[in-house]
Image (cartoon, rainbow, N blue to C red; front, side):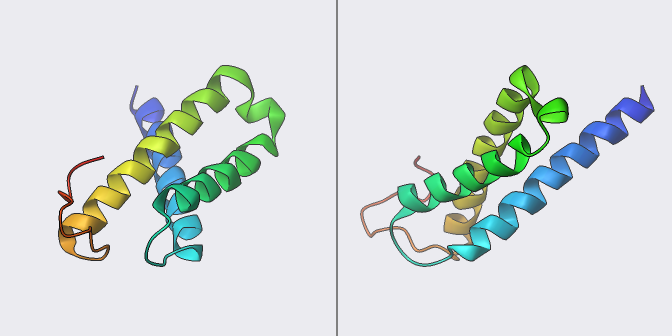
Length: 94
């Protein structure tokens, strides 16, 4: 059981670090949806490089996890002031 938890922590850490590096590449003001599309597309390319490991259901789960990480990262950056939301935008809104 502990080994399985360690494996999942490693996978989650890899997703977060991968997303972080991809997000850094497009870190500018505005065009949030286009930047997210780039990050998710690039992440999808990375996980499809090894079809045997990340194919099918596992690949779909990783993409869903990556999408959630991007959303959480953007919310955190808005709350702590890295991304400045529009004046009429709540930093916690999607």
